[in-house]
Image (cartoon, rainbow, N blue to C red; front, side, top):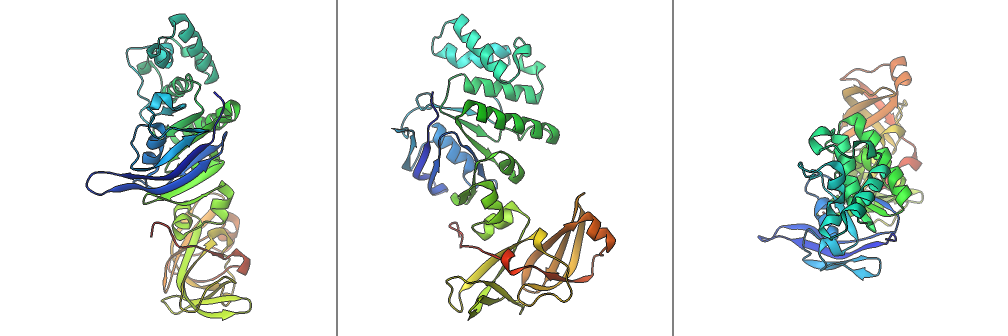
Length: 363
């Protein structure tokens, strides 16, 4: 099949008892896009994927694949294929028959379906293990078999529910490289559910960050990292500090706002009124130890924790009115002038490194 755009329009999922798992979600995934649905457990990402697949009913809204509304179609009629987290391979069938199973259910001749299955196994570099059963395969090998089985139906889109969660860290990196290569080779859309920020950033053309059943941000990975839409995205993606306060003064060059601890900070010019709440983000690696701290773009923090991360050292600090604040500095810079827990240090960032956050749709 040809790749097709996936469009989710005003989709809501409610369960008996009043629980809303997905709340009025709309999203366009262009044809040929690698999309990652990202968020913490319970945010609605897997439910959204299952509704696209047809394994979960929709309370409101509709889903379109290309020019076809698939909302009420059964999974086999949608033009999608789903790869489950558990792989769900049949233990009594060899690798080839596992891959060919869906074609068998459609009544395809045995020789034809096995030939197609072998083509799929070649695609995922598993043809040399065609006669083995699942118990004789490693976790990574089982995953490739499940992937070949999903692709044998020539779907317009492949749906993957946390496909790397059962793999060890080294194998995760290897397999995600293979997934990206395969998606580029096939040219179809992949929608991949994960709770790993690193996984989403490495794989996706489109990252969709979800929280409490809603989409907080949908954008390219670099946009999500450098310009998080909300405080939730900034905190969830990591490597950002969030400072919250209320606007106290409007100046020709921007805004001044106060935090509960009494400090005042600056932000770029935006449409705010005095008294309004405001939240800003500053990347951890843009924070410098400069004496004295720059007025409006700096403060004095108390070192709470120090973690060595190889090329960088992460320093966690506290300051009045600020929940948590981290700085990342190069390893060589830290060990040239090491710090200790309990040290009071000056912190400064550049005005252009301040990013104003929007209110969360899940608030």
